[in-house]
Image 1 (cartoon, rainbow, N blue to C red):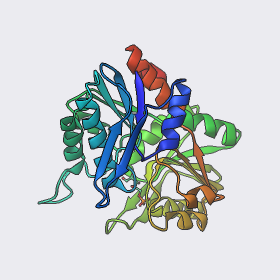
Image 2: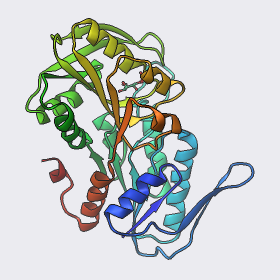
Image 3: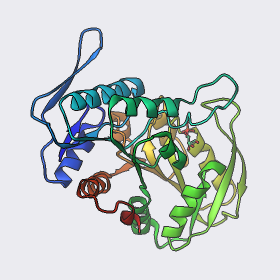
Length: 311
Ligand code: R5P
């Protein structure tokens, strides 16, 4: 087996390779003057079990195109099997038609990845579990919950915790985490969003008074959902609010919004490479997921169980 990386998150790819005690495949992914992507693999990969690490965060379209072109290069170089390792699968939020005459872009992206020549996909915390079914190739969806639960236990384990889902759609994810935290109680923020990119908190379902709240979600993008939820929880008597979110998309002024918010801290994984602003923030902390992804890769290559990672 070999590990190759695009440009999207080289530190993560290097950490995964280090976990597996192997070097990254020697390849270059460059841009022509007009921004076309050119990939060259500088070593033999014929007959190899290839794992290509390329999350599709910002800039989403460039990183997606790079992923597709790397897969094509590997296929034409006669790799035996290609696993697209996509720790953050962009376009996942477009997983259904929100209105008439709109696309289901998550399905289109799944089709593109399959058509490019991927044999398998390995993702982390897909926005919705059913996105696995958008691929007609085996797709493993890893959960960051064990990594987050261990950190929550270490930092906040001695307090009266309340796990909180910032919207109704995230309840299953929040409940799974609460279970790992000795069945901590669960509250839900009933969020209404009038326009894309804006969020408004309406109601808290559950009694959060005197609790240390842990907000759980898959994505923090503008940060609006989290900051509004934190404010609503504190107004309802919560003692403190911290957030554990798998994918730190953190677009636009998100970092400044988080820094100025009432959140105690925002903990994200490094599925997307942190920006300089996120690195510099006193409120944002990243948990490494390379051991989780690296172990899943090892098990896929060995054809042993991946699900048992979460028992
Ligand atoms: C939505 O369904 C997702 O799970 C996140 O809650 C959402 O993407 C967060 O976006 P923002 O940070 O822009 O409020």
